Image (cartoon, rainbow over all chains, first blue to last red; front, side, top):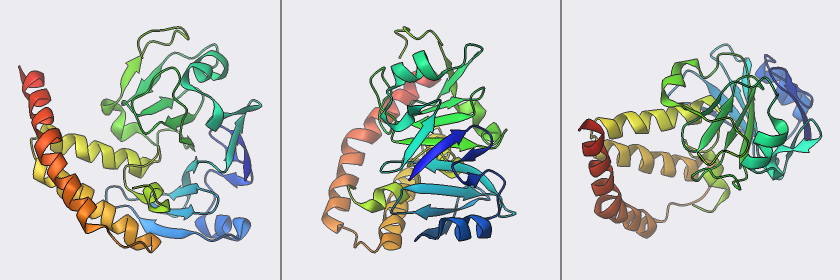
Length: 157
Length: 85
């Protein structure tokens, strides 16, 4: 499934804030439902498309995570085929102030995007997962991130 | 775990609950609770396999546990020691 990303809003036809039932009826595909043991969230994993939709305690969508074979398209770029160096050079807005990292996840609050790389992140790392999210979703965990140098040619990573 | 179950493990991805899972692991590590870390990871692995219809590979779990206690835990202890200095 090819999903056009509009940060803080939608991924294709799936909108942040939509109810689970609505998303289930729109996507009409096989999914597995689970409740989180560590947050008050639940999620559906659409296993054929590798799309994970996460819901808050009221059943409203708070994150949309996309992995291959699906495509996450943002500003014409295929995020799941873009390495971290490319993301920094071509995808970050000029006004971007901070890149947050916890070692395997990158959080871009200005852009409303998050990426997960599975292994240690380098310039050539390609994300396995791209996520869009509601504002303040990661607020409880911000202390676990460090701020990276935003220079596209930075040797920091 | 190179099966479709891999994507259903707790730490996979950048969703809020994956982030919460990794934060929980980090907290336990910082508290030196290495047995609890292993327990959480093994439980999570078994849950992911159950959900996706795969049978846990007991010999792989045993080998991973041995590797964790032989190599990972000592390294984590060293890191922790360095952090608290």
